[in-house]
Image: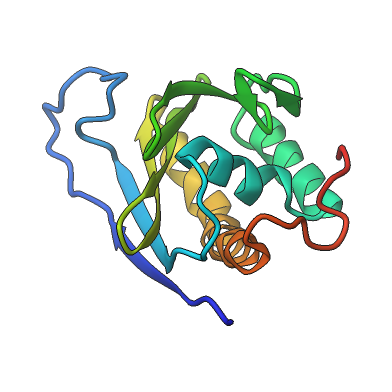
Length: 170
């Protein structure tokens, strides 16, 4: 079966007197959402998030970890550890939703994966913390909007089975 991914983007317009940084991401500067039909495998949201990120090809995992660290300045944790998913700390994990949260001087980002009745929903929320963040994210976003649908499709297609070299460390 071929899984398609739908995308939705929202970049709110900001007023000069905006609120201080909110760790709950109530008012992000950038939001996107990607959805795909849920494959037959029954998993928790965290298990799906691990399949999406940790079962990606080794070269892609290394590339995105390099970008997260170098371009965004994220202090990544271990690639594979119970409290991390590919270096991102697990901020909240429930059966149907998992939230990963990272922060640096430039920005804070949340990656959320929800398991719905009809499929998987990936949401990225970014909050700028430095004036250079908007320009940096504009470049990183070009890669982000290509990588996320690819890894979502790949995880959905594998439905529990790693594809290619997905089991190794970057």
